[in-house]
Image 1 (tube, rainbow, N blue to C red):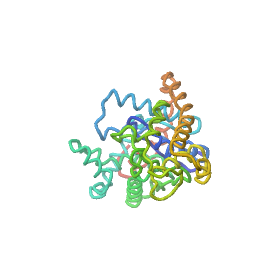
Image 2: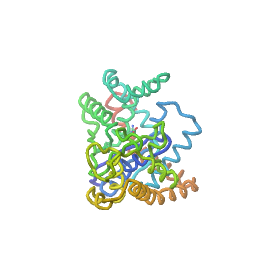
Image 3: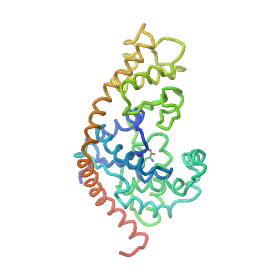
Image 4: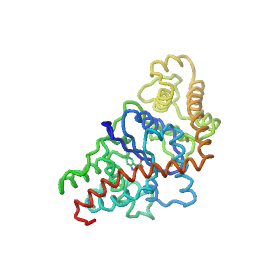
Length: 330
Ligand code: TRP
């Protein structure tokens, strides 16, 4: 191994990946690959904490794998595997369950929120989800984990679990820090800019899927909620326009001042068309590469198998250490 720090992150294979996921997270992952040892995963074990249709899940896992490669995850630089292919994740998750308190898990806001949505399936996996996430991170002795606001509490719990284990036995896990990206924005809903852009939004006009057709993208931007003024300006109370400016800035690299100058005296119609076009131009090569990859199942299979092998080698070292410290015999 080299002296670069290790970064771990994962994404759930639950349907569409949105423009928000791309600009807020994935684009950063891609940029990290030169400076860190990056380990990325499709978190299929996490996905089954809510009921999944087998056929759809199967399709979504492969699509997520291909789409992330299309977005720029480089299989020569990074390790990129499917979580359920590396048994150490399930195994360590069980062990960590026994070092995590009921009270701690009960305080997780995502568990509380999901319990309300899935009233008829508040399963034990949904409850101990953070232990699996801790296992993901700790198996690779990760230094840094890029997480959005919604996963911050889970990362903090991972740190607590790791510290507790280290203190009970002896140093075993590296304590991971959150990675705060220098760039990368929080992209909001196009229909209600006070809410985060989410693929689970009941209104499909609220989010852009990375695989949306160009004319659909154009339509969605044209319908985006703005305000009754007509100036493209980043200011308080202009959440809709601010969000579009932030998207445009992420995609083009222009500053807010430059964007304000570009659209001075122009209406929202022109602005929305330009934002949509910039997004389309950015996504077309990704969509093309995705289609190309999906035609080559053999390549995808070979890649995720090889990468799972690599992940297995690294993760088993940590798992073996943990089992030894607990007192299991080998
Ligand atoms: N739970 C994360 C999410 O839903 C995905 C995830 C699984 C993850 N394991 C992880 C993120 C480990 C960071 C580190 O977004």
